[in-house]
Amino acid sequence: MTIVTNPARTNSDDEIDARSETPPLYAESSGLEIDENLRLYDDEKRSDIVFVAGINGDTWRYPGHRRVLAATSPVFAALLSAKTDVIVVDYIDRRGFEQLLRYHYCEPTQLNSVTTARCALDAAYKFLCPPLAERCARRLDEMLDAGAALEILRDLRFLCARLPGAASAPPLPALTNDAAARTLGQCSCWCDSLAHNALLVLDDNADAALTDERLEELTYEDLALIVKRDTFRVSSELVLAEALSRWSTAACKRTKRELTPSNKRAALGELAYCPRYLLLSGEELDRALALELLEPMERALVTARARKLSAPVPVGAEQEALLRRWARPRPTEPAALPVHLSPRSEPAEPQPSKLCGRRGKRPKQPSFAPEERKTPKHGCCSTVCEGLLRAFICLFD
Image 1 (cartoon, rainbow, N blue to C red):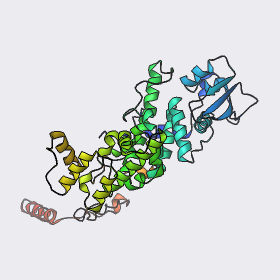
Image 2 (cartoon, rainbow, N blue to C red):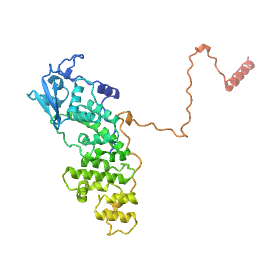
Image 3 (cartoon, rainbow, N blue to C red):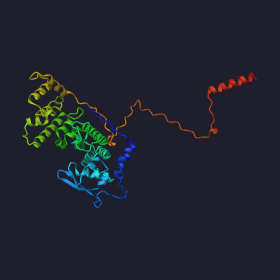
Image 4 (cartoon, rainbow, N blue to C red):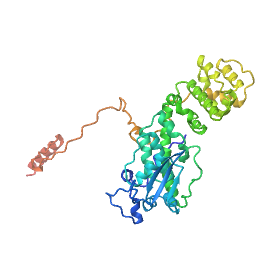
């Protein structure tokens, strides 16, 4: 299990927090002076470029300003170098592109829903805007629950650097220099941290995630990322088996295949082995095997091992390893600590035990009395020594 640590930062926390709250006015570096009271966002009169952004036919029109946006990132600079008055951005949801423009024009971002914040995170990644990616990751972490985690993890692995399925090379031609590559790495770091926290939330709320209808919309890779985790703690392995059966049925319908047990097993592949069948017994085991996620011979092996009968055929090394894995209990401890992105993921302070819960000593109060008013205190030793000294003085006087 790869433990995602806190995102690498080059500045202090105060500087980053300040930068994330008030985005820098990049247009000033290009020589364009903008009055703070002058709002250029949605300003049609002074605009010299038009963006048509959106996917799947849901496109909106946004006016823009070349000199302002060209200085924000190399991606915008590459887009605006074209000799055209209309630029089509058909690879970003229009809600995410709108939040990207609001951020660059120093307008308040509106990340009120999981969908909008997730689309804005995608836009921040593709347009190399780490401060907006940080803001989206922290906002999404605040809204994390089982359903939100499923929605966030959907296709998020393409924005991460450490999750399986991450893109091996950037799809945009903007990464021609080291600075752009480092900026992309910062965006990926925030995505990694958010994905790490989302997986931990799914571990703790496995039953709620498996019964959510959004599970059936996941791709095979996203589903494998969740159910193959050893720390995916379900109340019963039957819940996991039934969820995999529902997903395989939905996959067959999407691919226009017949709803036969063989087609369902083909859709699941190795994911059919994720439920730990030997942790079930009695009626629950019969219900799990009746779903026919396993081959007939594999079901016979599970039944024989559960009832402590002799196997129908000699059990090989691979089958024996599979049976042992199905009988191994799941760990009760979480895989790792969450990354502190919001008050929701703030680590809880450890409670002191009874042995260590003693009340500490009360700190000594300082005395502000003048020195001449303080009366020195004499101990027993000092009094005896002073008496002996006076006696010697009297003898030799």
